[in-house]
Amino acid sequence: MTQDRNGAQDDARRAGGWLRIDLDALAANYRAIRSHVGPDVAVGAAVKADAYGLGVERVAPCLHRAGCRRFFVATFQEGVALRPLLPADSAICVLNGPPPGSEADFPRFGLVPVLNSLDQIRRWAALQDAPGRPPCLVQLDSGMSRFGLSEDELRTVLQERLLERLSVSFVMSHLACADDPSSPRNETQRLRFETLRALLPDLPASLAASSGIFLGAPFHFDLVRPGYALYGGNPVPGRSDTMRPVVTLHAGLVQDRWIAPGDAVGYSARFEADRPSRIATLSVGYADGFPRRAGGLAHAVWPERPEIALPIVGRISMDCMTLDITALGDIPLPAGTAFELIGPHCPLDALATTLDTIGYELLTGLGQRYHREYIESSL
Image (cartoon, rainbow, N blue to C red):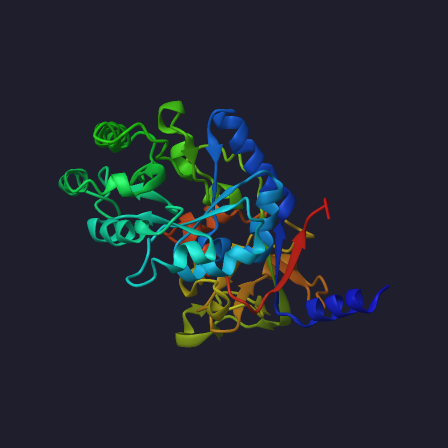
């Protein structure tokens, strides 16, 4: 066994929680989406927010190896950090567009802005006197009232002939209700996008992110931009998840004890035992990104007995949480025993539903104190 391997094992033993990221599953999800949309539609990848909290330095190269060539980040700083991680054949698109004064830095760092407003387009067009005319994307507001040009702004762009000074790779928009396939707003937005596109020259188009991909071929256009689905999230809530799980999160046991009826657990004594109860303290808390509100709502499992749901009781603290493991009886559990918080027996989307949130929030909130293990059989 090498010293590096020993060091990694020591780091794992010393950690309070373990985050396993299955890059093989990530690549399989990318390939599944590419197969779903067919050969005529390009498949990009959203890797913003540190690849949804999973580590862009490992995730982005994996997706490139799986065939991705267009990556989406939120900010200029994210793009600068990503550029050295990818080969030159990768387009890095910055969704928030160029901050004022940064326009000349985009081509210098090999980044492609998404132009969302009349102001951004005017500033970017002023750069186009330079040779090479760097590429951009243009976003249209099809009904989300967030990023993108309104119809009036688009007409101003055309009147000022600004488009003639741009090298537009794609025109794009974003769906507000794609996670609800029954929402009539999806078709309304698609038709609105078509109406706005008709004012432009014939340009490649992109509308669908993860959930929109599964609304059907009319939403695919020339490029889809999955994010959450790549990371194992269910893109169509309420339906069977076709994506492979990517994330497994375990927390380590610090200690456990039996308490008597009437004894309270945690801050504010939010849990009071009504019977003799075995309480386990785990070394993951809200500072690690596990939501404080999960106390009294969510559960964990011991992988040796995954059929038994172990309720999280009391308030989650900054650095720890407590489980009621009475159902395990007197089974010896040494310090460091791992309990699953997210994984095959505690699915990400089920946890999100329990906490009245979305899996996106849970993933992007994962902290930096976990020991991270990346699984990739191709390396």
